[in-house]
Image 1 (tube, rainbow, N blue to C red):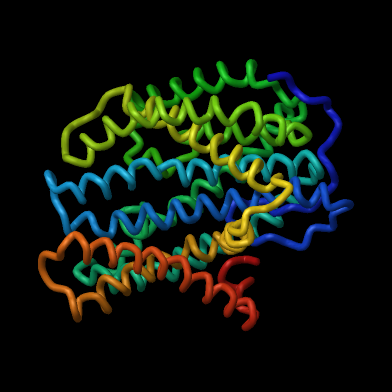
Image 2 (cartoon, one colour):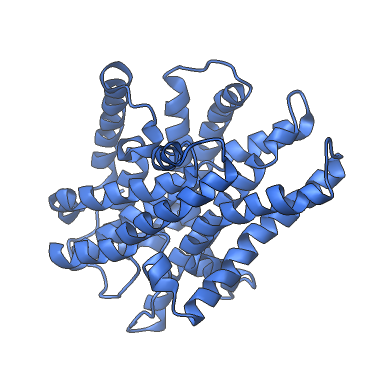
Length: 381
């Protein structure tokens, strides 16, 4: 696809993080507002995928292979792993647009300190006593270490990766201004991804590569490219959704074959496994972009569109709070009426209850914190 002209994107204030709440946009027209509506829809769809991942994971200990429900939950959990890379893709898109509109690094870093660094500090500290409540057999020092390295409260790793992205993107500003076409950016992205992967395998030996920015190079590159194509978003979505669907299906097929063996405990340390994952999550992230753009551009909006926008507006709050809701339900509430093996019907009922609760309760708390004027203290906004 050819690059657009070097004219800057429309001067519209938008949020600069994929998990930020939406601000009031000083739009010039209804058309401009509609063009940015898809960002909240994207966030809403992605945050439901995150909630589904953790809801599936909360039940895997109740079933074991060769149980059919275990395979269904594990397969769904693996297929939804595109969610965090999709959030990082969106983050690179909106941050790149922010830098292209205003390259003032002082303003950029002040905003990032409030919207990313502050929630990272606050929730890392809050999760230490919470993690100790979950696993009291660890000392406080061990608990703090487990929270930081991601072996406890694993969802916090996203904030650390987002911090890394905020630091790296200003270094790429000369590239962003060129708005490179996809045919130039794609081979560079592939070569860089493989180079970093083999460097980690044979030299760096990073213990938790998914907690580092280099693991998400394809998604970040896709976000940077889309940021330079803001005038063509609708055209790209209309022309690219079928390609994205095919890429997602092919990549998902190969990725799931490796991921399920991994979930079963089979050693799948092969180069094809991460490559299939990168292909799948890139295709799924691009497909999510196409769906969100096309959905928002419909002349007659679907009745669920306001719901997705609402979830997108409070996606950070849902992201940070929903694991707590899941833990309270399984550790404190369900134990009073559930013990031992449960039937498939009861598992499905509990699955739906947990999923609804881990979205609805954080949404309610987010609105409550806003009314109490605690939102900026807890979430940086």
